[in-house]
Image (cartoon, rainbow, N blue to C red; front, side, top):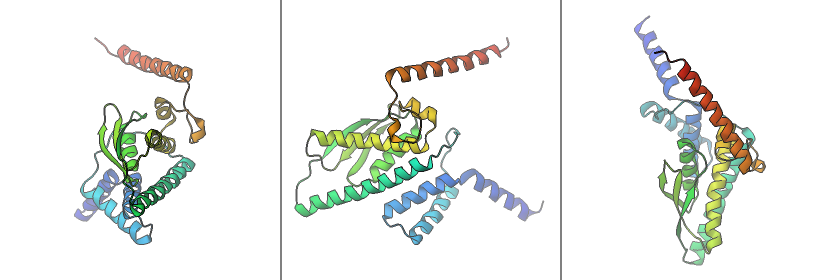
Length: 226
């Protein structure tokens, strides 16, 4: 193998190891959302920047998992997220125009997914909506502390809390496996109408999962030789 061929092989190996289509797409989406302008120039700049970041500062890879993408649920996630940005921006603009003093607050949200990735995604999507700032995230408990721009009454606090959980559910139904949805207490599927597991359903799922874990553990112990 010549020097040039060896260099090409190393470059291809580095590309495959560090650059993934999902990472490029997510970083490009973040770039476009930060600029707030969907144009060919912004998309191209986002793609180039995403590839450079992944090549020069690769993101540490977590445990490998099967990628689950539900197209309709993913489309709903993007559409509702875009609507939330527009509505929040309009509300903030109205407060500024009218000169009304906003009533700020900090809320605590206990997320439902048991995953660092989904906790980060929920925090990221929430922070990108104008008027919402994630000021702290507890990885071990899955708790987010969020500063909200304007809440007029206790009902508005509850609505802000529910919006974060709804955002998390849309993310889960777009990208989580059926098992991850059930761990979070949701019925499998991409539809928001699927709803949450009943107490009996969740208990049955936990029992079957614990039994499967015990069976795997017992098999592993049986294979150990003195």
